[in-house]
Image (cartoon, rainbow, N blue to C red; front, top):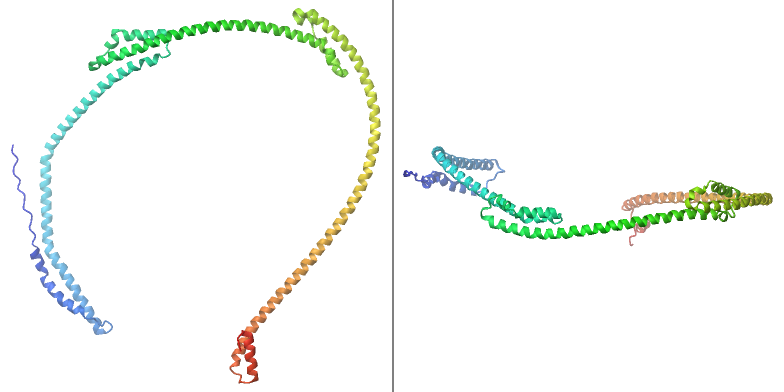
Length: 416
């Protein structure tokens, strides 16, 4: 179906010449206004002010007439433009109503084609992505078996070598890549398998060595424990044997405590060394009892000597205390005399300071009074000088006038 011809209206021709003719009469009066406004108005006079106001009214009337001419000419044009715009909008709306259904069909078909193209692209991308993901899974499979056991690696190899592994999916154009990926993974897994065998063999050897070492350590620990047990028993027997020597110089109480501790020792506690332990306990107790008697005698003698020394020391301390008290009494008296002298000197210094402050205050008061008096004299002198200068004009020439002039010059510092 052919497209109908559409008639396009010619553009409206403006009539500037006819419109400008409206202003010919008004423009002709401008020369008169220009000539009337060239002369200055004497607005200070009543007549001049009135003439100036009338001239302004003429100018206002001319501007109003100019605006009215334009409005009267332009109003019909504005109405015509409004009707033309309304007609244009009506035609445009009708054309859009006719055009829109066809345009909607075109847009819908284009949208369908775009969606179909996007869906195909997404499906293709998903298909390729799935193949790539499976290829990547095959390529990265050996990483999961880096530290795996021999059984796990062997199972993975059997799985990859089975025909069913690649037959689980349709690889399409990626079939060759899948086969190459499987071959590469198998090569890597076989290397992992060899490593796993060597690793497990090494671990078994280390475990055997560790078990043997643990057995040796247990035997050595058992022997060491036996050695320490025997050593502890012998150390106890040696301590019993040397107990008397360790109590040399100790008092009755400490020796008695050691005797009581040895009396609680039982030879049966020393296992196979009980005979040796019993003999050591009996000998040590005999020696310690002898030392106990000697310690008691020594403590009694020491107590008697201490009592004598204490009495002598008390007598010495009493004499020293008496002498110290006498010295302290003398020192206290001297200190009291010094303190009294210091108080007297401090009071004298305070009195002297007070006298000096009072004299300074008196001098300051006299100085302030003198300054106030001098200020009053200066103020009074200025007043007297002003009066003297004022009175000089009334004193006739003569000795008095000369003396007044001399006094004024002396007061003001003027040269005679």
